Amino acid sequence: MNKVFRKISVVIGFLILIGGLYLASKVGDSGASKTAKNNTDAVSTSSVKKNYVYTLKAANETLSSEVVISGKVIPRQKIDLYSEVTGTLAKAGKEFREGIPFRAKELMLTLDDTEAQLELQAAKSQLYSAIIGLLPDLENDYPDNFKAWKAYVDVFDIKKPIQVLPTTKNAREKLYVGARNIENQYINIKRQEHRLTKYKIYAPFDGVLSNAATYEGALVRSGQKLGELTHPSRYELEAAVSLYDVQFFKKGNKVNLYSEATNENWSGTVNRFGKMIEEKTQTQKVFITINSSKLNEGMFLNGKITTKSLENVVPLPRKLLINNNTVYIVEEGQLALKQIEVVKINNNQMYVRGLEDGTEVLAQAVLGAYKGMKVQIIQ
Image 1 (cartoon, rainbow, N blue to C red):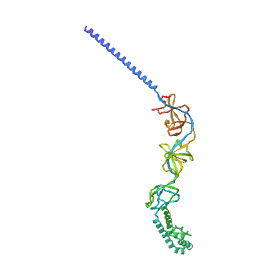
Image 2: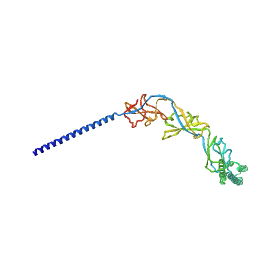
Image 3: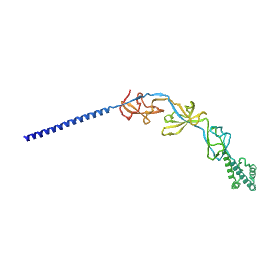
Image 4: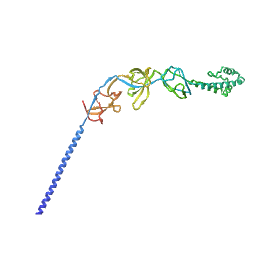
């Protein structure tokens, strides 16, 4: 009986084990199926996800345009005054002070030249003595030219500018005079006379002292800066213009200029162009001539120049430009890159060619935008 009971128990245990394994396999298959279904749904949902965007419809038109510029006023005629000699600054006709005007060739500065005058007179006296010492030999050996040398000595005055030496008539006379160092002394006197002229400084043009670095009674040394002289009405505006806009500036073009600080207007003329391109801003300098006594160095002016009409262009926000020559457009629900030609840029606006009328241009940046991205246009 016990043996039969044991056999029945083993059979029942085996059946229970088989049943448990079967139920476990069913539960596993059900969970995997459910997980697979969820993953499939997620992929499906992801594949149809779209980004909603705003667009602008391109419309080609002909537009009149202005180039707006701004820059600093700089003098067109300005020099720095330096002393080439050493001396004490003496009083001239006017005070040497900032804001004082001077006419062309008017005496501006004079330095005490007493010592230089005495040195010059001493050199002339030495030359005079040297020539007198030659006269007896010249009379005996070179009688043909003695009268010329004698006449030179008779009119010699150490307080007057040195006269040109008599011309020697033959090689022997020239060697004789040269050996006595006569020509060397004469040239040294001419050099001192020229240097003496540097003790007086005259205005090279009509101007106003824009800076004065010395005063009456001060000791001035050679090479010292004395001040700056600026023409009172000859100025130019130095403006940095975008390379897109430089094409609209030609030499001789008229430019309307105005100051926001003084509420005044001026008319300027394009005079010349700088040759260096500013690497970071991609701008080129344009210099505009202005003639007005109401201007001052360092003023900031704004200006406008009316350009030729721009034909077949589409105005777009400048921020839409990608790599200088493309923009994003929407085609068949996807983003695409469209190559365009930038004709002009004005502040935050640009004018481009290459877009057909009705083209949907992306109006705002989309995070992570790429070619082929699926988008939905917001009407």
